[in-house]
Length: 396
Ligand code: V1P
Ligand code: CA
Ligand code: ZN
Image (cartoon, rainbow, N blue to C red):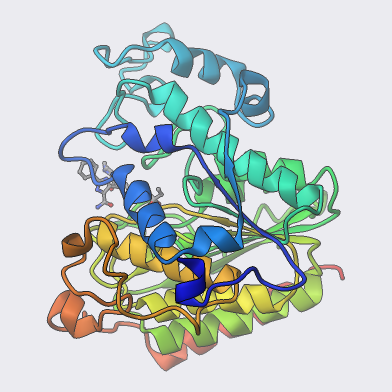
């Protein structure tokens, strides 16, 4: 398979792939947009192209309670580990009618095996981080991770356990500075908040921003971390608020400019890149006009930096496009993006599910007509100017 597709191990560096297939069997509920099955579809396409022959493949174990507690509060973990799907828990102890730890509502429902699902996602991310720290991998891939909204003691936006924060904490045992980059269409609020008070992690999120009408409503251009004199983390949160319809060209130019400047100034020892695929055109929840090529160009740009990197999954609610993007990005990691056929392999499982037989459908094929682009050249320049000014406060 690998020979017929021309895929060989990249020379001089290692890529590892971390997954737990048990995770894929969980269900959030019939109408819920998060479908763990998208991981099965992605993996089957990656394997159909023969890419597993070019990587070290790990079936990962679930994270332990102690590993989850490196970030999450034990109160929250104890509740998450014991609550039953039938109950809709309310915070009655504090006479609060709200949901307890934000669990059990429509965004973060309780479902069978919830704790296992969360600890498996974190287990894969942590395994990826350990392969980076031990220098066995140059790029480690954990498509089952990337759940960026979870807080220390609160579930949020389909995320219960913040596997990214747990993985970054592991990276910080070895690397003095870690750069977190988030190309999910939503603001990476949970990761940003977790590292608000340290200058060892710089976070940058590109997202659709509309404080009133788009989840989670945070991540304005000038939200850059608490600006107290005593907070070393001040200025270490970069936010890139975008509007509907951004194109590959605009996004990639902004991404290269901003990430290029940050890497030059911050000099991270490792990169954690959240590749949420809901920023693609045609996503059920997203609003952008990005194509698989434009999304992948962000991964390519980071790879060219030659800095050890973890690739996380994240959002992505049109499974066929999620599978396309994460397959293309796996091919970039193993440096075979120019070798693989743009036509989906004949033997790929669920081939008909992809509608078009290409890895790179056009916007017209996906949407019929592109979404109106509300991002002006002036707005793009204002963002670059703001980030340039912000970086003056970051010590190099
Ligand atoms: O908009 C909201 C909340 C619910 N309202 C009270 C405000 N929630 C969003 C959550 C999106 C989470 C994205 C996660 C990620 O960044 C990382 C994995 O991709 C939401 C939306 C929406 N259109 O934004 N929830 C739902 N849709 C939803 C729809 C059907 C059933 C359950 C939830
Ligand atoms: Ca984002
Ligand atoms: Zn998202």
